[in-house]
Length: 160
Image (cartoon, rainbow, N blue to C red; front, side, top):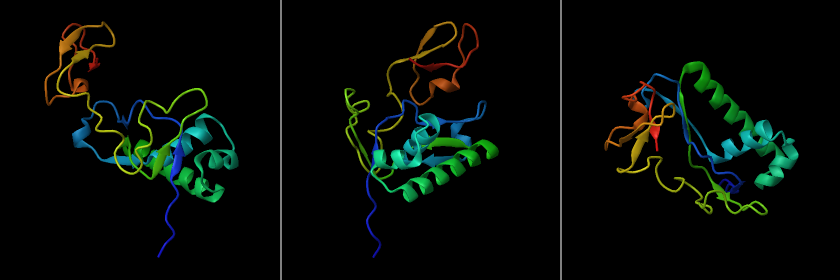
């Protein structure tokens, strides 16, 4: 029987959980799933520029495990870029950890395995907003805002 995996300590909740190539609908493309542990490894090593030993300690894992995490994450990101796939950040065996003086990310408080506090949609109500001119249009249920064009200037809309 294999040894149980340690929970990875995550100190950052990403604001965006999907990235995709422009001009292609998300429903029509393949996607690569980065776990929260892989995302945190990339953030610590490549974005924060922390050495692997210190980053592994922050995540409560060994340095060889951290090296494997960063390697698989980089391969997934390269696959998405080279083959035009979407990237989704979701799941894994993790625990949200409070940073000194900051609180626990965005209030998720350690969801652990599986979903990150629900889906990624903002619900049936609300508005779609143009990032260029600021025009707001009522959100239409079942149609993502990013599939709509601004009626005023033609720019891709975002959820407001």
